[in-house]
Image (cartoon, rainbow, N blue to C red; front, side):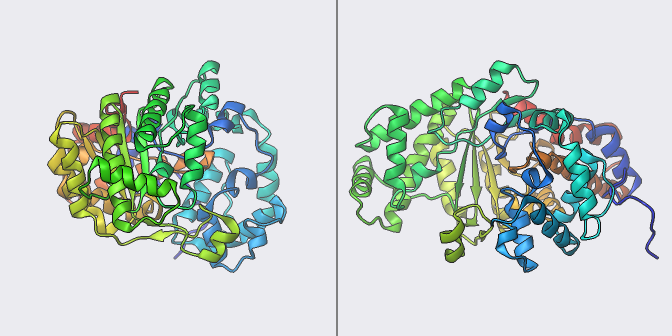
Length: 468
């Protein structure tokens, strides 16, 4: 029989045995958060933005929720259109009961409980009351951007920033001596998109930032080098690349220069030429990151903007992406090996959007370890995989093929300041999984050692690995 009267989010949420509960509450729960990859706005942190209503912080820019609303037939005017914030929230509240089975249901109620102390289930009936309660509470300084960060026990945030960014917001935050360190992360994706319609326009932006005319490949590399060093001075210690697959094509300086000049002239670039150019530039960047002591990240496997009509209407990052199915095992290892030949392979984290590629990455990283614990990482379940099953699969596959003990753990990968609860979600799921292994006799009941392992994954490994 279904029991009633108990809050949905409670102390034992997602913890299905006594060992799991002990591991979570005694070892994981209180640890600080190192959110080393996210998309929150440093400008909003610098300005300490105060939100007028729950839609501003919950629905603006959240393509996870937008996809769910579209799947329920909600008109686009209530999603990205001209409807009022309140009407958009009411439509989202109507949608929430239908998201059961999707992590959105858990995230929604975790965020309401942790930041607003609201236990009600979100639905059409409760929506009006929740709108009013949250609107009133959002006027408190504890729910400004900095207030949320502070109460979430966030120690370090790494945003995602284009090389053209002047990083004024980061400088402002540093000057304010905000308790949480907020660092930029270098994301030069557009410099790799040779042959795309926006490539030359992007080079013009880089020219303005870098102060030199980019009329050769070497000039581009010089500007990227200079911008990386500028980022380094602002505390940056990570780079990130969102790319379908890591390419590897043998090429020469002359060939890549010719490809670059074709792109400047607006001439068509073949797939092979694109891969030659990207291989060359990524190898240059990998060596640059190694020289700076940075960590290189690759987010692999996304098919982006698959709905051309909606892309034309709304642009990128609006909820029309999907999981790709690419073959990259050989090119990945060739790329890592090329950097390793000269001992210039930086610390790296590899994420895959396709869980079928988990074992490929988990096995590939084992060939390039050394120098530092967990030098090459299989990154946490990402995007469509930051679900209970997706996280459990990533943890299982890493444990089976690599070393779970060296994992640097979770990140939000979010644009929302309320998403720090995803760290709690991950910690509960991980403690429940490990607790089930202990109770089944698959892991020893060595509380001290397993507790240390969990604390490493939740916090200590990342603290040591990134050395901010």
